Image (cartoon, rainbow, N blue to C red; front, top):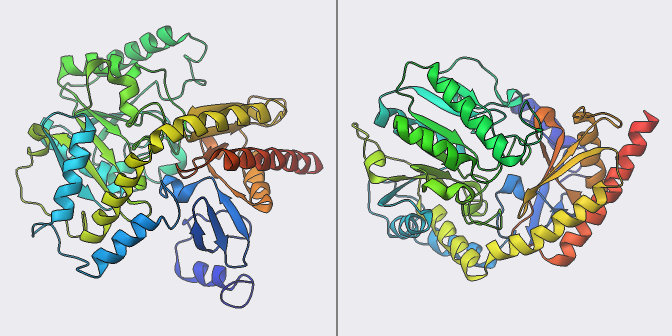
Length: 439
């Protein structure tokens, strides 16, 4: 029974007024009404262990008291001012992010989303370099705006071929598929660097930037060997090309080993720009760009942000970041995430639906295939997601053709919950396999 008093009533209303392309999970879509910690409840009173966190956005926990208190207190003072006025919370959060970024002489611009953050980074890079040529990774995803769709290398999320940019796609983001998959790590990096050099040789020169996710999010939590982007950086620096690290999903310690994803590729220094969003607001609409001052200040026109860095969202961000650092959630992601990855690999070993379990920290991808083949299976992924929901576990989907489960719980996940989630997923894999056989 939904909150409207009849099953399906809210879904009917949704379909009557919202776009048909607005995806909904599940054959019977859920209305989530509240959450606490790592759990959420739907309108029918069912409780779920949340292993997706609102697409990696509920970074610390549902209803985290420290964040709730900060939002409430700020809302009681003033909700909105815009960037036309000084904002103490915005300055304080910018100071902390600049210091944590690893970028020297950093400047921070706040936005309302990761899409807008990446859009802004593209604007800055193309203005600084006076070029609309962008390098992007195959299988990438950077947002849903006109400019970010233009640099998205995942066809499932590219609704138009029209573009304000000339985008050139290079190899390297997907380690276990593609023409270089059989190579060792060093040879793989060398092959990808050679591909980058070859692509650049086809251009007229003056490429503005390379944008890359250290771990591809929508792409199915794939990543290259550590050091790939450091090797790319040597080539980029020779040409004056900027490096934008898209940290919308990898930032804030989620990968466990590093606070930022780019730090796995730090051999030749930090990126020129990094973008962030999702987890920093723990559900509030907060994102942004960090860039060295020379790049950030290259804009020759006036600009403001009406909603970016609003008092309420940055108050949430400050409280959330403080909690994350004070409670070493990066360390928790490394420890509990490592345990979860180990358990999921053990579960996968007994299933012919699973091709690969990959990831780091609390970012795990489980790639599913048609049994007996190496062919990605979106149908299997959909069945597992449904079966997991029936057992009380929420997971996401992504990857090539939508064949990968995306598992990214809030970073306060404890050992007992990790064990429980792995057990629930094992049951869901069994249920899905039985349904495939029956079909």
